[in-house]
Amino acid sequence: MSNSSSPSLEKVQASDDETTYSLQQRVHDLEHLLQKKEQQLYEKNMELVKGQKLMNSRRQIQKERFQKRMTMRDCTSPKPTSDFDSINTTEALLKMANRLEQAEEIINTLESTLTGNSLWICNHFTSEEIRKLPLERMESLSKIAIAILVVVSNGTDLEEYRISLDSVKCYARIHGYQFILIRDTGPNEACQQNEFLFRRHCLTATVIQLYDIVLFLDADIGVVNPNRKIENFLEDSVDLIFYDRFQNWEIATGSYLARSTNFAVEFLKEFASFESKFPNGTIHGSDNGAIHLFLAQKLRLDSRICLKIFENSKSFEDLFISEACIWNIQEKTENRNVQKIKILQKGESWVRDGWITNSQWSLHVDFMLHGWKMSQLRETPNWVLKPIPTARNQWFSPFSGKFHLEKCTESNSTWNYNVKLIGDVEEIQMSLRKMADDVEVMKKKALVKINNF
Image 1 (spheres, rainbow, N blue to C red):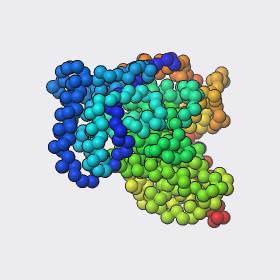
Image 2 (tube, one colour):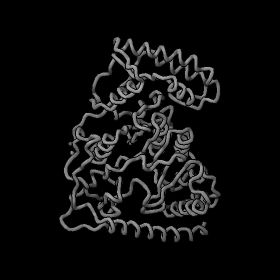
Image 3 (tube, helix red, strand yellow):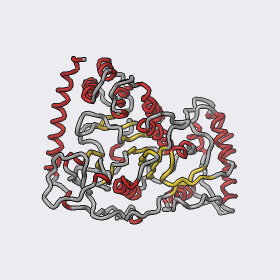
Image 4 (tube, rainbow, N blue to C red):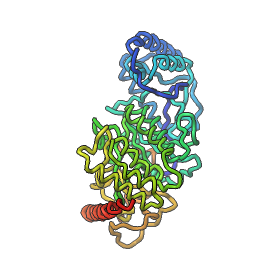
């Protein structure tokens, strides 16, 4: 496993259209015009590739474009002028039309496509570049197109997350997922939130319109078991999947799964703007605290007493009481997974904090671990480790050596592990169950204090 790698480039068409909506009418009236524009796109594409013959099979064309996107390239490569990818089917254009609110917007998008401008996007880019991406769906040979998204602030030193990011990049290449890293450059026209932790969810709302599924990850989350697949966590009727953290009763906002639907897009945009709902002088826990009240509204829970506690919170203890209050109400509802939202219980998620088991893990239990910052990495001790909770500000790497990203292929999912950190399955599960039980006791104690407000 090595630091050096050539990030994969993804080539997409430049477009001036920055926002998608749902088209409610006139789709059928557009079909003839879209077919005409499609023909113009074909002709332009043929001109730009200098007469190269198009394959008779549309599936073959799709396959070549997909393989081209997955080819390893250098982010510093010059922008190409000889060719670009285009949408080559009426069905795809109509799908694009269905995502727009008004017919004029799809026409303007198509006109801008015909300018011949092209844009190379590597897997590291800024939030301003994301804002300008064309809103065409990414095609894939697999049943669904999946992306893994990490958003960092503009001044972030990526070396701080080298191991976690390398593990995610390697994992993505093994399974044919697209890895995306965004450097947030601050508020812009599309995402005007003042706080980064909220603005990143607005950026996610933009990215999920380009794929079928997006897994959002904090930068310090790494993959420890590359044989697990994101698809195994999906449900057809669910658009957003969150999870309950092990060490408390918080719904995590550092990672979630989002399906490319209008519901998910609007949910994330609204949640990002929820930063303006906080009363001055309260301890609100940023997006981690806000998600509980926001979900309570979305799930139409009667959470007035919880809101009162939240609005008067002066400490993190008050904040945790309000969160416990919302959990208590939610658990009493007949259907926890209403309105296309699911919250995974402890032990059901794709990620957990590594410190809970002293960095020990198991292939039979774990998929991803949270808390991999290079500044907190410690050398693995010589003595025998036990999977018990330890300090949150240190961790041991599960890997033996560095990643060689060029070797991360579908046929090579064998990683070199530090055998000292591969724990006993039963001991790890016992430790996790004990923490879950302890947290449940603490939550009940917090609920008793609701009457104090």
